[in-house]
Length: 356
Length: 278
Image (cartoon, rainbow over all chains, first blue to last red):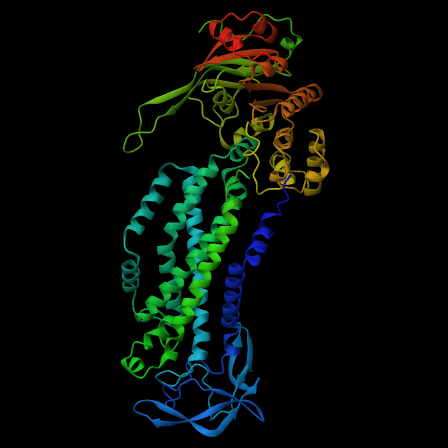
């Protein structure tokens, strides 16, 4: 008798005990925490403009007798957006100040923010954009869109893929043929063009929430086929296992067999597939928003913020802080891939149902 | 088809007990893959017109080399594969014509023990759930705690400790898993067990234990067995009557002692000669 711990906790423990898995989980945990508490962590709203401080560089922090403070800047050359720190002048950072109102988790009305400075002055941890909005705040609000779109998208597409692929693999026959030919059709069309065509097929004037929903639906529509194919294959091989025969002889209905005997054996695959597919959704949203047909101003998303970095002035004057959304996308995608790879390393040895 | 008459003149008292299962001219046919739209006109017939009957409390052995159609017959009897033609009757009722929920009363009476103890238990379920599942289906009135008690009783009946309930199949050896499979089959309180090579994947020492367990259960519960095996020694030990299968047809059917003492068919003689003597 081997001492293998129960599967579910085993996976969690093994992922955490591996450096790469722990790192990926820590990064993702931090990112999702930031997205969840974005309105609290962000000193300003996503649309708060300040036209006297466009392309403001990140304010540097100093330590003064009154505590942590930010330097104040003067606009030396408005045409080139050149700012210089004013020697000796600082604004103290205040903790938990009252700021613009918001609803935490969309529920609890609240006015406190984590930090801020006395109102005429501004703190720009990551600089400001072309209309003086705080990039740091927008990055946090953008994380809400970019990080949630992956989770919602993957839930829908894996759900559809699981049902379609599972039924196709278990029952076979004409349903199998129809589902598989449909996935092949979807996969034969290059993804980005199909994405653009589907987006173009809908009217361009939508509210932010509707566009968000539309993007999720389009991305899921493209994404389910891959999941369906793999689930079908797994269902086919599980179907041939003797314990499914045993369940039939016992008198279980096909639905119960699917639910109780096939699904738990697919769970580990679904976990890996989810972790490895989420980057596709994040990148898909970023691509659509970057091209101007995704999330619309004044809402924030990482792709939309990157679109601003296309401006010539950003390159000429080296406003590097406008590229931070790109870094955020990079880190998120890398972390999800790292997590997916670690999960696969952990689960794959156990993956075969004939336990070894 | 020489000597294929299923009934035999035997003084066995089991002959007076009622016939449970009656298989008549059973043919199982699989289409061969081929053709663009998967409409194939070519077939294989692993079972070509097989007839036999099993009485209550009787053990019928089914022997033959691999590929002779033994397992397919067992699977047809429990309706895992559809018969192409012929009839399967259980207590005079045609069960080959039933499907879905209407098969359920039959499923309560006829269960199966599988060859491979590693694949026949779902690795993600605890033993309590594996053994409790038939109870859920066929004894829906039982509450969860009662099901658990019943599962513990069944495990005790097959010689497993009660603390097995919350463990997973991979924590057990092959012989123990086969015992779990037997407990699952017994859960519905069946009359007939189809044993598809139940010991051939096990060590010789464990084989004897499982065979003895099956004999004990038969004595205590009055079970009938359709015992499928390529191991003639085990079949001789267990069976009242033996059917010899060759290329999908029964070539000889006789009471066990008679068949082993005086095989009439050429193929049976060859098969018997191939038993390694220790």
